[in-house]
Every structure is written in structure tokens, then in C-alpha cells.
Length: 300
Image 1: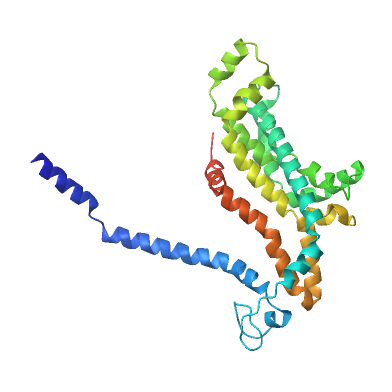
Image 2: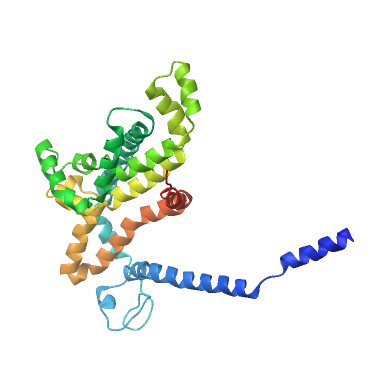
């Protein structure tokens, strides 16, 4: 009897609900359509980068690159011209220097600030932290001119430091790191203090390793933001082409392509080349990026 009852219970659990299945199928269909709508422009970009200017501006819509007779024709010279125009070797190196240095400074400084707000009882902490959070309401575009003036006074315009110094701190990152440190147990710090450990030693050897998942997430997002930063490079690097980043060089190529139709395929090829590193980063580290979406909503 027990065996028969268990079999019946198992059968009931395996029995599916048609309404639930239909709802799940409808959800997948809708998400699939939305995903296709989001990714289709990039698919068009890839195929159009292999076209001739005449094929791009030909009346009608054709996804695949074809010649006048309707035969497939992939123009690979567009990518060779784009590589030359982007000066990929130098611009990629400049981009990596800016992204790596800025990400490292951003993480360590924001983590230290978040730890101070969470664990160190200094004078004025209670009113200073809300003031810092209020600064998150200021649009970033408003700070463009002050940052530019400060960089001019420091004499770092047209250097890579102009892309690093204004972005070494992030109020949002400070807030997230503070929330992570608040959730840690105080017993570990108290035990380390009794053993004679200093505040810096406790921070680097105990607390920082415990919040490493958030550090990874913030490191990825900070790296991606610096990689895509174009508007600031347009202002901070006006003349010195030797320190241009990929975003700045691509902007110049887009400007040339918009004024010269013959360079339009070259502009599209340059856009594909520039986007590839971030696509690789996303697919390799997508688990941590998706984790950041959930960690970003943590509340005290």
C-alpha cells in the first residue's frame, strides 16, 4: 500500500498543468521576440560591414552582402581599412591602460570609502553619508565642465591622466561597497583587533576578501564604462592623437563615414571591431554581470 501510494503521488507530481505550460511557452516566445529585436541591429551591422557602399545604399532591404547580380559578395578590405584608420595597436593599448588603471583605483578607493562609512565611527559620519548619497542625484553631464576646468588647471589635458583622474571615485560604487561591509559580522574584526591588527590590516586581510564578489561585479562594470567612454574623450583629448582610445578613434571614423559615403562600410567595420572585446568580456563573465543586477538592489 505504501508503495502504491508513493507511485500515485509521484504520478500526480509529474502531471503537468496545461495553463502553466501555455504561460511558459508564451513567455519564452515573447522574450525570444524581444531578444531578436534587440540583437537584430547588431546582426545587420555585421553583415553590412562586408558590403560595398553601393550595396548599403541600394534601394530595398537586403541583409546579406550581395553584388548587383544577387550573388554573395563579402568585402573583407573594409576591415583592413578600418584597422588602419583606428590605428588599432596604439588605441587598444591606450584603452587598456585607462580601463585597467581606472578600474583598479576605483575599486580600492571606493572600497576604502565604503568601509569607512560602514565600520569607522568618525565625527560627522551620520550627516556626511546622506550628503554623499544626495550627490547621486546630480546628472553626470553637469560635472563635465568642472572636471574639464580642473584637468586644465592640473595640466593633464591631452594625456591619459585626463581620462583617469576624474573617474577614480564613484558615489554609486561607494554606496554598494558600504552596503556590503555593513552586512559583515563584527566578531571577526573584534577578534583581529584583540590580536593587535590595525584598521588597514583588518580591511585588506579580512573584510576585503569577504566582499570579493561585489568587487568583481564593480570591476567589470567600471571597466566596461571606461571602455565605452566617448564624450569625455572628445573633450579631454582634442588634439593629441597619440593618446586616443578606441572610443575616440571610432568617433573620428564615424564622423568621416557620415561625410563620405565611400567610407561608410569602413565605419561599420570599425564599429564591429571596437565592440568585439566587450562582447568577449560579457560572454566570459556574464555570470558576474548578472549577479551584479541582483547585488545592486541590496538594501540595508
